[in-house]
Each structure stands twice: as structure tokens, then as C-alpha cells.
Image: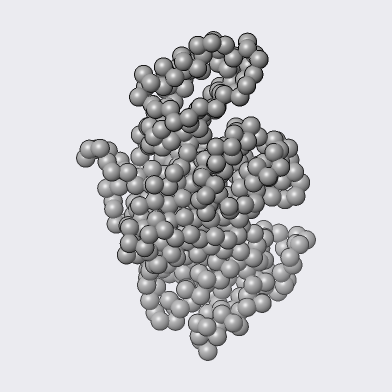
Length: 438
């Protein structure tokens, strides 16, 4: 049986998980692909560090160049994270013509174009299934399984931390701060948790998926990002009464451009009201899911664990198998890492994106307030589909809930700015977009 040697950069959770996965199922993978992937070296920051998942000392080095530049190592797996040294590692390996497997979503989001160009220039390949949604094979599906489809829409619950928090808030009626603190104690959220709860982790992932779906590389600065800090137990309660569940959703949606100078692809991350009847509403706790609509295949759902040692290791092994097969048959670019195919495409400004809306106001309960607010919406050409006004004592502050018809984001934000200045409105209006999946 043919053998290829593997070098891993990074011995943390993912690196040690890949080592353990190879120990467990390496022979199974070899029997399926006809190539034995043998781990030769692992580069780590500190040789003496005590690890929860120990690696054999004989495999370790603290110099990543010893791994990358070793002529007897054929495949490099960059599993260290970060965007500086990791970038240097990958570029160095590609320059040597070595295929690289990575799980580094932040690096791909920031430097994907450069890395893919290097892979093409030096005749190597870059595999990155584990960079998005852990063990869910969404990258391969977009690159290969849906190669004959135009992707009209893609919706992803791609951050397990936010999904865990929002799930518990709904099921327990708990406040955001209390659930976040508990999630940190249980290891579901980092300290600090900003990358997750402010939506940036999800934005890295959804930008990669958007790029693959639409054939132009999405600049992460053009992805509209909104986190879940402002979601309250009250919002979740009213949403449920209306038949909705709130999820942090990554959205990639094609809009027909209004003119030749308009951009047509929305790429966004924000909290979203999802109908309870939709399959994504039942994706709970730390699980991820990606819902894809192709023009030929129709609707498809991918569901599974989006993070963690074993889920990520599963995707890394899948990429290692592809890399080994490409080496075996001498075809380093059977499936290119990224192929631009709609170079004129661009990201739709969030102000132009159209959706429905949930709006919660805190108002003084007195005659004429509802009418004045409705007038502002009407003057902005924004239709109201329903209103919830809980009974209160006249003169006291009460919540007022509006469900709005489809309208551009910019128009709704301008209307809410005017409404927020009304003397009867206390505090900043809360606006959460609604997705009907039509």
C-alpha cells in the first residue's frame, strides 16, 4: 500500500484530536482510499507543556520549519490558528508544492485570495473543510456536490456558542447575561466571548460559504455583522407568541440587481426570527446547520456538530484523504480550492437588503402614541402586518411590538430613528429581522 507522510503544525485541541482520530481510524481510512497517511512530526509552541491530550514526545518539535521543510513529509496540516504565523506556515508549504489542510476560518476569511493564488502558482492545493461548521461537509458539498447548481440562498446557524445561549434563553426564559455566564463556566463560551456573541466568528464562516456559492471572494469588511448582546428574554417571549424562534443566522441571498451598477448578493450575520415550523428553528444548543437552496436540487439541510475536537478532526481526515488521493494519482488540482466564476459579483449593502421585521418599543401608554408611530411607518412606505400591545396602566411605560412587511433595511432604520426621538418612546427601539425563506 502506498504511504504519504503527514506533518501537523499545532498540538492543541484540534491537532491532538487529529492524532487520536488517526490512531483510531487511520487503518480504516487507508483501506478505503488505498493510501496510508502516516503522522511523522507535530510542531508545538512548547515541548514541556502539559497537555490534556498528550502527544508522543518522539513526534514533537518546537520549530515548525522542521516540519514544513522536511522532504520526507508530503502533506502539511496547519491546525495552530491565528492569522500571522499560520499564514507564513501555509505559504511556505505551498511554495514547496506541498498540499495543505487547514481548519483556520479567520485566516481564510482575511487572506483567502492570497493563499489560493499561491496554491495555483506553485501547483499545490489547499483543503479547508474543517474551517466551517466542524464535522459538517458543507465545503465539499458546495465545491463538488452542488457544482451544477446556482445557489439562490444559503442560511446557516454556524456558531454553537450563540445557538447554545439563545436555545437556553428560549427554553428557560432566562436573561442573556445569566446564560452567558453559565455557558462560560461550562466551557461553551470563551472568556472574553466577543468573537462569538458579537457575530465575528459566524461572519468568517459565512463569508467563506458566500465566496464558494457565488464565485467571487467576499471581503470580510463587506459582511454586515450584528451579534446577540441586545436580545432579551422579552424579545424571545414575544417572538414565541408570534410563532417564531430567534437564531443568529448567517445569510447569503441573491437579489436581482435594480440596475447594472447594483450589487446582488446579501452576505450578513444577524439575529433572525425564524418560523417555528421551519427546520432551522429546531436546531438547538451547540449544534450547527446549513440550509441551502439550489436552483436545480431545491432545498437541502446539513446538520451536525459545528465545533469540538472530534467533529473538526473528522473533517480534517476527510481533507487528508483527498490530499493523499491527489498525490497518489499525481493530480494536485483535481478540485481547485477556489475558482472565481462570477467575478463581477459583489456584496449588496445592508441598507438595500429587503426583509420583514420585528420591532419592540418601550412606550408611555397614552392616547395617540400608536397612531403617531404608525404614521411614521406609513410615511416611510413601511407596512404593518400586526401589533401587540400588552395591557398596562395609562401613563406608564409598556412594550409595544410591531411586525412589519418587507422593506429595505435603510428605510426601516431611518423610520426607527425618527420614532426613537418621540417623547413617548423610552430607550432605543429594538429591531430584529424576520426570515420567511420564500
